Length: 269
Image (tube, rainbow, N blue to C red; front, side, top):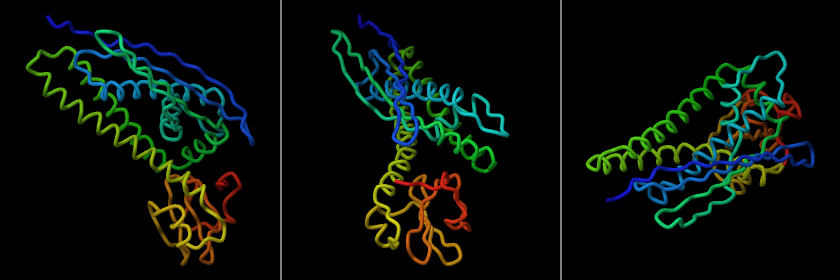
């Protein structure tokens, strides 16, 4: 008779401090080991393992931010810190190993996130001072949590389901994982766009030159006859038809000029 195997969860966490060139940044590593059950495919197991490793990494990032970042004039709760970590901290896959255990396989995934305390302090201060940005971040975090919870609920149901229900639940699991993957890709693509823009942007570029170098922007608006182009979490401001500066998204206001932003609010390569 076919034996039902349950997934075994093993995780490890490591925080390593690495000094940056301009200021100290901290690198957080998280690992998760997932042992496949009878109803898992390798593709789904990899996705589930990454989701758990990323969750652990963001939890540690939130704890670290809570212990190192102080925002004057504002009280910031643990839940809010976790929301900011999910929004601003990018988690990347470092390694993924598959081990044959005989009757099943295990997936071992390691991820990494780099946390810049000074940058996080800036972001949090700006979010707390702008109710609209704060509301948008909270809504995005609720959406992420709901997607993740749906995946975990389906996983549990699939483990306990009678044979006649498994095929339907498998299809629901595929759809749930796809929705979560799309959500994360959309968020990561914004960060990737930002990096590409920053790698190619040069003061004095025309809009055409910037688009040729960095690609099409997410958004474009005009204020007082001057163009502003958005690449993920960066806004590029033009003055007299040429690139004048780039500004972090939380600080961006369409009517402001480069001279109105502080050095910390601007982005430098």
